[in-house]
Length: 165
Image (cartoon, rainbow, N blue to C red):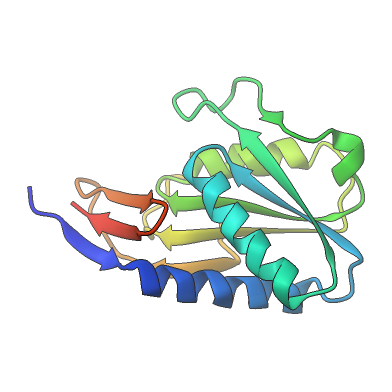
């Protein structure tokens, strides 16, 4: 099967910066927000957004890692910070690729167990054929793909890219 690069390092960097500015605009009235990245690539993407946000905004940004079993998303979800820290705050749940929507929707469900000020979602690639009715608030790129195609995002030290195979 062939692989097509759909985003290169420069394009990913540009999308991270744009998403960070969109988050800043949305949460400009907040003193503190939580960027919650879904473990693995979602967390790496969240760290990159957090770095840009801290350079452009005076808002306190708390980074949180969210661990979800993607094969069994109904199992216990763990976060690197306690519920008391994100209670009554604005949260952005971040992942690299939105495939079926199950990981994101179960992540949303987890955070809704406590009162929040605002809740938004962000992904680098939205594949546009979801199984669950979840909307992404901030996205790098939307792709109409078939269910047989696969999107992979690679974050390396000096190179990042997204491929469609």
